[in-house]
Length: 110
Length: 113
Image 1 (tube, rainbow over the protein chains, first blue to last red):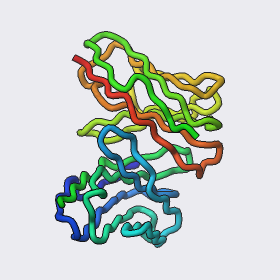
Image 2 (image 1 turned 45 degrees about the vertical axis):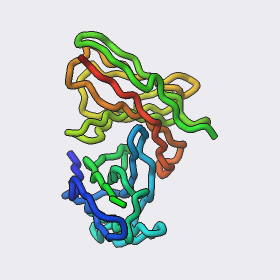
Image 3 (image 1 turned 135 degrees about the vertical axis):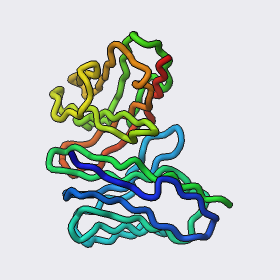
Image 4 (image 1 turned 180 degrees about the vertical axis):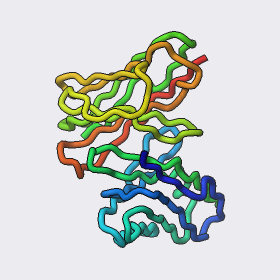
């Protein structure tokens, strides 16, 4: 069974601070996706990374896929209250099935 | 394009009852996946349907079942409800390619009393 461990589980920071969320596994994934979920809504895809060592930037968000494709990180620069939400990583395998981590609940205080 | 819709949005049932949840995918999408989300276990994969056939299945008991219709709409059924079945049930649809983005609906919040 493939498992994804996310850390930290909870994160509360002040507006303007930087933060990094981690997603680790002992398994290799063909792709790694990051989602953000807001209360009362389903997860929304932020990015997909597929190549070991790949780095993608989305405005203030930087995503990295580990060289061995077993881990990933999400770094947010100068966090804003609008970044508040549950951040989920999900690993993709060859059978179209996604394995999700339990998520990091981020609160950015004004 | 309209997004993924799920009905009902909220549901309260008692132990032992059964429940049917509905999901309408984005127009043109033939793959529909179902997930259970709880605070303790996070998002767990239930099953995926593609062109009316179950293509993948997670590790849930047989009380959880699903089906997909020719118009790609999908339903999931939970029989003999248990307290632990209380959760947010999410449906997601995607296109034909394995690399297509998966789009989630807002979910159905099921509470079992």
